[in-house]
Image 1 (cartoon, rainbow, N blue to C red):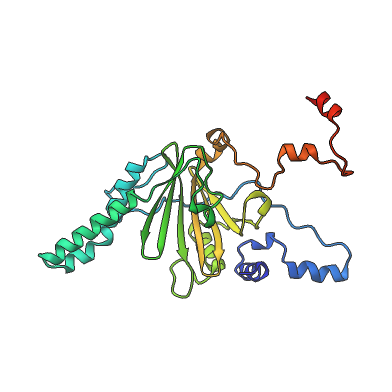
Image 2 (cartoon, one colour):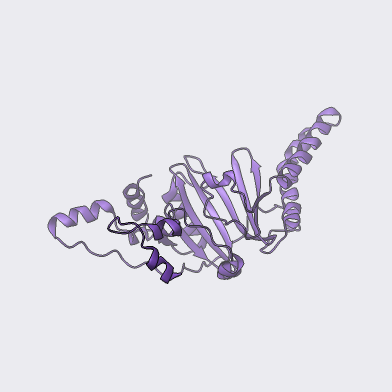
Length: 285
């Protein structure tokens, strides 16, 4: 969705998305005045929700163990096992004994195995995840990994640092009849109603690794980002506040600058096109 279309819809919903200046408005004002008004400053931190942010997914059984930050992959898998069991509860009720029941039990067991086998480790070798919208949510060579729970077209990704859960990304579909909302503006409106406060709007900022519009909130333990994927999808990203505050220390190996110039090449190139001076280079050494 184009920025001005999104922002116009959001303004109509009164979500505070007017913090981002519409391109159309700026152009119109530019015709009347040579000086366009500066966009309002973005808050330094997201607003605090009035309702605690729950980690997802979670089992309907209130006695079942729920997800929490710092869990190991095995602990997360035990929670997802319960979620998978519940997702097939109705199938088990409708399926009589015999071969059909055995087949259903095998299907459920296979889903649990596939989740455990979905692990991707972000080591020294680049992965295919770099070509997806998840790029930028992880780094390499910092003991990071990901597990993915799939059911139909829906996906939930679990991110780990040093084998401790610190981020969950739930991909949601938008459209008529969707529980998330018919479009991004409606989805953000629903979240604002749930949390009792409008979120902070963060426009796309490619220089800082933000590739699309986001609206975020936080509570005592969790940072939530509602990220626009495209017209018919958004991602709900949950992050552990403690880990966020320590990311620099947890990620000692920084990514290389893909747009950087090799130092040897830079040293050999002069502004005037002249070849390097060996004497000067020797002095520098």
